[in-house]
Image (cartoon, rainbow, N blue to C red; front, side):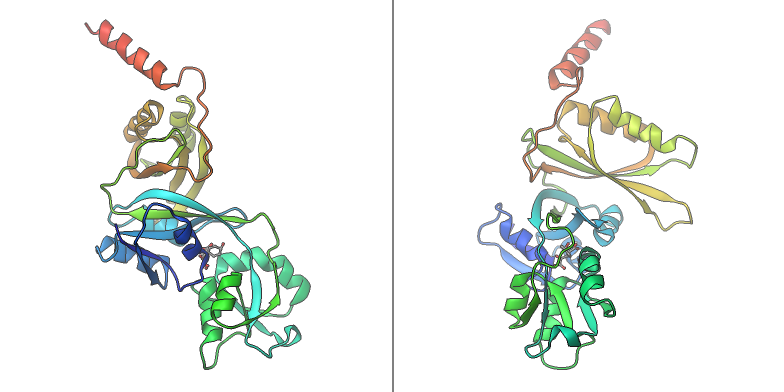
Length: 306
Ligand SMILES: O=C(O)C(=O)C[C@]1(C(=O)O)C=C[C@@H](O)C=C1
């Protein structure tokens, strides 16, 4: 693998995630204007992998990524990276804070600085941009821009020669965004004991207790969920699929058994990869759900069957 796409332009938090990814020396970084564009290029074979944001500790799931992975030609996650998020408010030299009337940034970034904005620029209009660094790049280029200031990473402001009007403006100082490295199917990282698996579940039909039935599959095998979101399928009002991250690897017995159970009760199970956890947390196993417990139970059944 050598061509790695990412949500650009340079200076995005996504590029920081790609810089922090340790699996690819000599890689070429290819910026894309949107998550959809990066994943389309990956599906088309123009790049080998793509780094995209999937979840923020303050604003939650990144719908563009969740939806692009849930539909279309299959893709798999092969790794994840956590990046602490720090925002600055930046502008062209000479623009004082008191003159800022409109602020441009990515919608997930805006959600993380809303409190600061209402305290310091309560009347400023919000202008969405495709990434935080895109707002800095627009201000850094000559010509008219629809906003006077941008919210981005400090590195994006300095890349573009902008002045910092305010530092560290995130409402939650502990904000973290989780990024995933996505590739075409065919690469399954080996289990490490500290892994995650990502799935999208489509229900057979809408009925009372439907979600509970899906969750039981995890619960009885001691599989812990680390993220659960419902996303509209787009087919009709009220039709949802479930985007889920669980602890463990598809090669772990309890995860494999869970997937088989889900396959029986769901209309469709989309496997989106098993990969090493960025935080190194090892999955705890409930009594009766260790590899050994499953091996012993399987051997016992084989014996009964003669
Ligand atoms: O705009 C960027 O810099 C991104 O990498 C995207 C993104 C996101 O989608 O959440 C990543 C981290 C921040 O939380 C804000 C924006």
